[in-house]
Length: 413
Picture 1: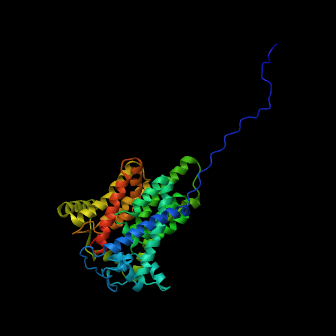
Picture 2: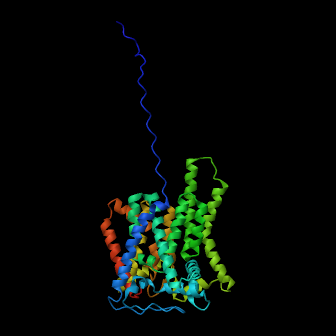
Picture 3: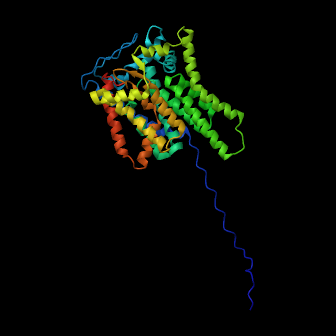
């Protein structure tokens, strides 16, 4: 029998086509609320316990008030669950919230958004101290949420959890829970990058402008956003060669890039209307700050730390953490250029105004908002270049030490 040259047709069906891979669900801010809430509750409880148990554990210094606002006396009691961070510049924000700016004192050094929001809460009967404290802590909770979501987008879930924890227990993170502007500025900076990285540049302009009204260092967001806009533009050109960017997209990016400067101009315009455009800069001079190149400030700080240790060494160690990590993150290409510019420029700006006797005065507080620091630490732990428990242990120890000093009115600010 001769076999057929070809097999006969059968009714066997073709194998099913492979199912298309499911797209990963979009990262949403609301998905980060739960984790942010848990971290906030833990660090809030730790800070409250430190206030209750740490007040008066060693000789407290005299807390100094400001014109129109007396300092909270440092005495034992249950009130230290809440008032433990109400020292130093926090009193200036309360004075401005309740009485406005004055031309005959240094209040012009403090940018207006934070105290004006507190003033708004005063209209519904909330006094200046609880208003500023409420604003700071709500903003910190929001910052933890946005930090988790943005880090998930950039580095994945595990690094997001690590980075948020490192942020919450950074040695000067207690300022986020105290009535200072750090938490509000951090929230606005994170929102600015969140909207920019997700392509919503019109939305990014709003928090960028508000950041320029919150702190003078908000101006560095102009350069950071410009770098991000350029990088996205080049990426778009590579993915769609020959397709010009739409006029609307270019306009949105340009508006966001300019927005922090607009915030600064609004504040300076107020002082111009009062007859003194340079009042914010003049106020800084009243504290004895002098113009210095950042490298000279660091050199002076290193010399004093070697000679005197104490505050000078603490200042240098805390400041060195973001400086070293961000430079490493840039070298290893962990961070996008916009994040590197934000962190290094935010660090460089306060280094141009040096206290002669203590070059890094206040800088440990300012660097807490440099969130790319925590990203680099998280990646270093993921790659087993650093020990996670070691990073957390050193951070918590620094938080407790500096927090105790601040609670008792020592000069950690």
